[in-house]
Amino acid sequence: EIVLTQSPGTLSLSPGERATLSCRASQSVSGSYLAWYQQKPGQAPRLLIYGASNRATGFPDRFSGSGSGTDFTLTISRLEPEDFAVYYCQQYGSSSTFGQGTRLEIK
Amino acid sequence: EVQLVESGGGLVQPGRSLRLSCAASGFTFTDYAMHWVRQAPGKGLEWVSTINWNGGSIDYADSVKGRFTISRDNAKNSLYLQMNSLRAEDTALYYCGKDFTDSSGWQKLLDYWGQGTLVTVSS
Image 1 (spheres, each protein chain N blue to C red):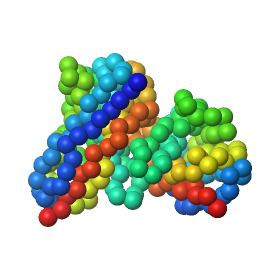
Image 2 (cartoon, rainbow over the protein chains, first blue to last red; image 1 turned 90 degrees about the horizontal axis):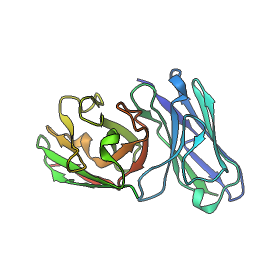
Image 3 (cartoon, one colour; image 1 turned 45 degrees about the vertical axis):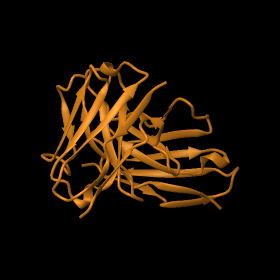
Image 4 (tube, rainbow over the protein chains, first blue to last red; image 1 turned 45 degrees about the horizontal axis):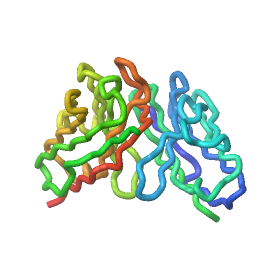
């Protein structure tokens, strides 16, 4: 099983700042089958990024994903108030596993 | 508009059974694999099970293999999860989700999620 480790566990930033979230896999993720989901309190997760770098419908271009192999990054270029949430990475190249999540909170 | 509505959750004693349902609408149900993903209270996400478009291919997480059974009724646009021999560690919000890819297989990439149904296993 591929284990995904997200860092940091909690990220405290202010609106307008840049956020960088990391997802590291215990072994290479085949085909860059790496996704990111956004989850707000009391809501279901929403698909944000798939194939490591493809933005899902409905998300603005301040969200971007990058990486390959074992190291992946989600970047939010300029934080808006609605971006504060928990973000999960998921690999779907070998069955499916999720990271433990990064909580992005307002500083 | 894609809608997924789960039902069937509740409080159940350890060792007992429960059947979850997910009613789907707003897309061609038979074109997509479907999934169950769960989230324990205050915890992260865990993939549980996947079924392809016609039920011919099924996969389970090791944690539920042999106890849970996924199925679908394409005539009713519905997905099910039969959960037997429930344990305290099965306590979670159970989400059903639609696969991203319209193919005979799956990608285990969920582009739409329901709001979940809560299963609590406790004596």
